[in-house]
Length: 294
Image (cartoon, rainbow, N blue to C red; front, side, top):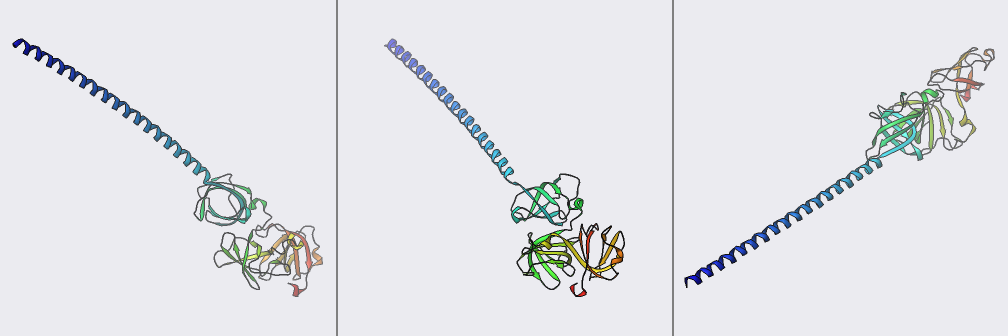
């Protein structure tokens, strides 16, 4: 009987050891499987993160490239480092060149033809990245500055012009060459005003030298420049003319006219080329006029 108990106990011990062995094996296998799956998930997560970062980087580069824009146009005005530019298709721009890379040593001037690369944004004043002066009015030297815009107001001797930038400028037309056709000055019409010196600020009046309306832009008179006043002096080298507002202008006149043919104080109209602003105007022709024509 005792022998049977011993055999039974031994059998139970064997079964217990086997069960424990199987449980341990199953636990180890499950743990290994879980670790493998976690490693695969982490690897896939890293790959997805890398792909997302790459896509985000490419999108940022595309956005940065799309934000750059180039405009070629004329400098209509300068306010500190902010340029008023008339671009293609009569689109006006306000662009700050303070931190821009200059394409040369020339200083930007009014009347220059310029090409600017800038950051396109919703801001009214854009930020320039770089610029190149294509044609320098300073070097050309034969052109007084011109403002293109729309007639906002006009009277006997004044005109207000709204530029493409939205700013309005006021000019005296007392001595200006008026090329307006039969319609005269019409509010709302496109107009080019050639003026002396710098653009006027605020309500100040600049001095218009020529006013050419769109209607009359094809007239022959629009192709040459004239100024009317009284002859102050004329010699073999220079002519000095005084306009009705008391200003005096000097023209190079070598070989153009015989001084003996014109008396001091005579009412005359001179045709010239060059710039009155830069004081390098050259006389082409003199014509005496009746006093009432002035």
